[in-house]
Image (tube, rainbow, N blue to C red; front, side, top):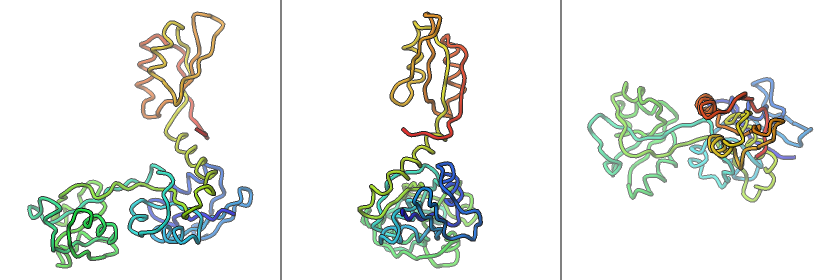
Length: 279
């Protein structure tokens, strides 16, 4: 039975649970449940702290799990990332007092506070910078004002929290993190079905199906507008001057593509949602 770790709380938990449900797996009904067995699919789910998941998987106690790239790298686990799940995005940046820092090299010999000590230490090491990394569990933006550190490294969205603390962002992006499906070393093949289901959910979320009628003489131009994954499906109609075309289109492009097809001469343009997919 495949053993899979799922975040029990935090920004990754809700979306991971929804993806598993959309993929047809049994998920917990009570937030207090820490273990769910899906005997139909021969899989067990363990609900764990997001920060611990990479460690359990890396040690082989569990076969696979869902965690952030940031947590995976910070854990220095042996777990292997097998798929980017395209949610839970976060950006890590350095920040310090306004006007004090111009580049990362200015951190040489100073103190940097962060909730991700290994991630920051490894990054600074690759840049050839020696600094003291101060580990905090949260609210690192207060570290400078309280005299614990000279700068911080933290997740940044708008930067408003840092500005309120009198800090500004400097230097390049440390890491752009997203949720990952990870597996224990040497167990990639065990996760094949889980991986395909997750990828199917991603496709179903990111694409829609376009169906439309098109003059036969405009097939090439229409296919350029909706190329699909490999190629659009083209079927003859009773009127030999027209064909029916079906293709997958990015959901964010729906109205622009419909306008473009209509202007080209396509008609009866229909858009359908996808509930499941295998690509």
